[in-house]
Image (tube, rainbow, N blue to C red):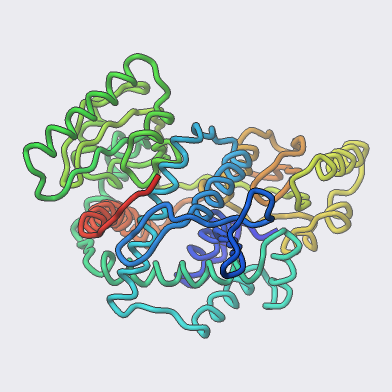
Length: 445
């Protein structure tokens, strides 16, 4: 198995993002069939004509792109125990994402940003090394786990292209001052409120930077519609998926756990006065109007880090036969079988199988969500039931937990990364909206 545990090995800056992007947003395959020239297709022909769903400047988004993306999203949602939106809502959201991807690809080409085969090879080689494999072993492992290597490689190429584009267009403009880092570190050392973390759901009603009065009135009307539905009891994730213009709309607007320092001031100010379950009034920023819900808050010492050591047995696949095989393995373990021996015999994770199934120490956010949730639910030395992630089926056992002090240099690096990430997210929203506003888009029914 190739999973998120590799982030513990501190690989070079590009490879973790690339691998996670490729494993969490698998390539969209566009399969097109054409009839022979001059031969019209009929209902009885084994031919599918691929229609144009949207014209994007000089490019197009095809029906097959949308269909493939919808199907893949549903598979991922099921694996991650995520609610799948209604088909019409999902189709609209997926189409918007594909349009934005096409706009970015075109912009990269126009600004002279490209990738080459050597760069793609280096990225894949680095990913393989991070998994203690050579390139051939890595390729075979991908294929064993059901990934098409050629499509994986194409996805790496696209991710490299997007990364270079965002580095030039967005990240190069982001600055974090030493004073900001000093203030961040001082606040989490000395202010209990600043050490709290907030689980946030978010809806953005976007407007252009130079919005007209009419555009602002429209956004305000949409914000009122959002609040009316939420106050009437509608599920926040469903409303976000249907109505939000934010980057996390398809994830139900879930921003995950954030500290106040990681958020723009208009959000952090609002959160200080909110209790779990509260909704904000519409909040104005340069990107538009925002509605947030505080799902939960928790106290925690950010100068310390909770870590978990676990071991697992992994089998690729998504059917009941795989689950049943793991149930048989679980029975053997409960009857006194050796985890080391059974992991070596059955586990298809080449990185951990030879170590008795042991994963590296991990902190929050470093495993796929389903694995992390399972690990957090287990007592020490408790063996899980078989459970599924997007990679396949697992058995998991927590071996040890510990609390680690974060040294001053690591704390300052954490501060810099958090502050930079918050600024980058805001700027990507603004930059993406600007690109979209400047593009010609025609959506066809």
